[in-house]
Length: 133
Image (cartoon, rainbow, N blue to C red; front, side):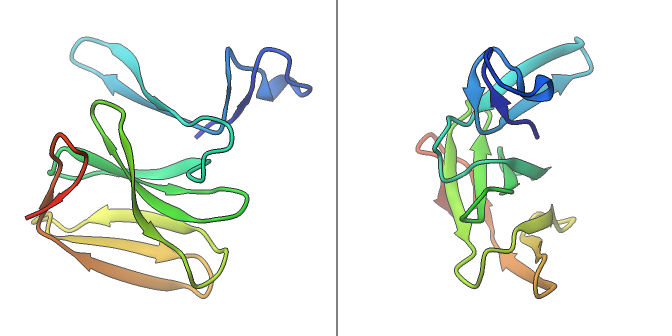
């Protein structure tokens, strides 16, 4: 996860080519390429993506680590981001998202009060970003 303040950021570690609230990159070890999949714009409700997991469905799931709202978001290979789940319980972030071996259950933790959720599929990505099978 990274947040960038743009080229004129006050702190050196926040300097980036463009201001953003997070980025997700994809590395392909076969051809040794690094590709920016999505840049979260400043002001997005889905800021600070981290704890990213990839499932067998054609999309990744990221837990946001934002200032206010906490989300699970889906991210397609094309860089489309779609809301998946919102923490309406409190402002504690989701963490540790992972799919079961068969890909039908997504497990995700909520840091406070320390709960783990099991979310059942099956599911798959489609060109509109989300489809429940």
